[in-house]
Image (tube, rainbow, N blue to C red; front, side, top):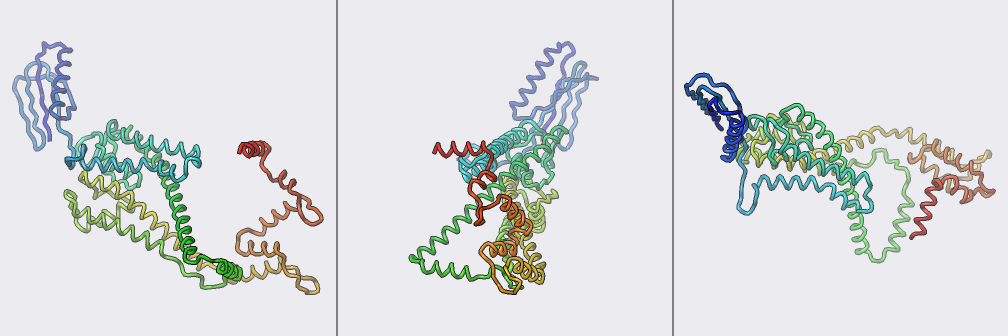
Length: 448
């Protein structure tokens, strides 16, 4: 894949001239699109020229009595990329840059979802750190750090395509192990970088996902309400009837069998995961240069998207590496959703099976007795609205009886009026924020 050229210089040359000639030779090799790497000096022994050849490298030693200057050069072992006329870079590099843009846009998506006014210092710091991490990681991977790999011989920096491929393995925790730092300092730096990346990117992704889910839920509710208003312009009677139906519904569900468990989230997320697995199987089998068998492609797809990443099978072409970056990011996300939906489903099934109906009955009779006013003669005075409110909150486990006792004790501490009411000023002074917050609130209110 390359060659070594050895040059012998007379012993009479000064060290400065030898050094100048070494730099000139290295520059000449670089101009021939070679990766000039090593310049070595040694004492030549003997005047006979020697040529050595093996399967990969041809070495020429020209030795005379004098100083031997050895310059080793060879072309780097890079995979071929696909070029088209309308792109200034290769297709693989274009997709790699698109992946970098996708990862780097996460903080800006968060800003749009939150709105500028709702951004906190923590959000700003997190977003700045994520973008800085992305830029520093790409710079270090492609220019500073040296990596070993089964895809090439010897340590060297990564191309942008390889760097994106490695970033995707880090962010998804797949970790094939086919590209690794070559030297100890680089290994420590990459290890620290992995922890930082997972913390920053994981936090941003979780918040973005949560915000998008909230917006979609709110928009769906608004759409349903709008459709109902459009289909029933005059709803005064229907709303009253609906309110009456809600008031007539039991607060406690005594249906022992319980409602059927909804499996829709698991089916949706599982279908998406199977889709990405299928896409991976077809890609790794048919893409030129990859050529996995059907069973190998199935094995690689499942092992990769499950983030196990044994690494026996991995991407071998530049196109495969770029595809892997996108495929791993989205495929692993669908697996996470599938696992979350499965865990939620199992939790609901277990809770349904653990339901203690006899215990709930005993709790009901105990609470209705405690919060009802029954005289010693047996006359039923019933519950007032406050008693019924306490009964419902405790029965539905919204609040515990201990917490309710603490709240009632706090109310009694105020020492209410004969009618049972507590003055507004007492509550304001006893439960309100510190005076500094009050003054700030008043200033803010007066400024508006």
